[in-house]
Image 1 (spheres, rainbow, N blue to C red):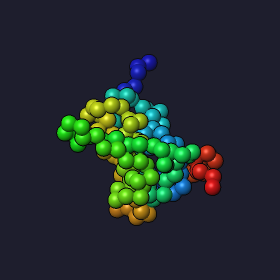
Image 2: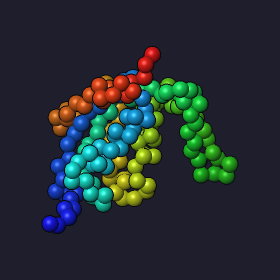
Image 3: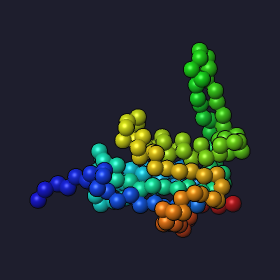
Length: 155
């Protein structure tokens, strides 16, 4: 018996679409990171890119639990001395690029700074609205809300 080691070019990369309307950010991000890495597959290999392409729609309508929408702070640096900037999740969701909330959550769950992590993260497409240009790939729609009652924030 030999240990099977998957190759990146031999893997079949499926396309999935997930509707993020009313879904809790952290739970969705863990699901997306697992699909991008390929950990849901029986032939998962840590050093090969065997994950799926993931398309997220309605990223503007994601929700946080507790007071995270108001209290969670995202930091960035301009590159100049004393150039640290901060913004809250509430401002990011109401701003010009609300999809960055979900992108940051997924990026921070991926392996750190490597060519493999960049190629895996490159298979994530996040859209603020309900439209996406990937119909030609005939993506499979995944009902993330229906998997667990905790995936959706109760009003």
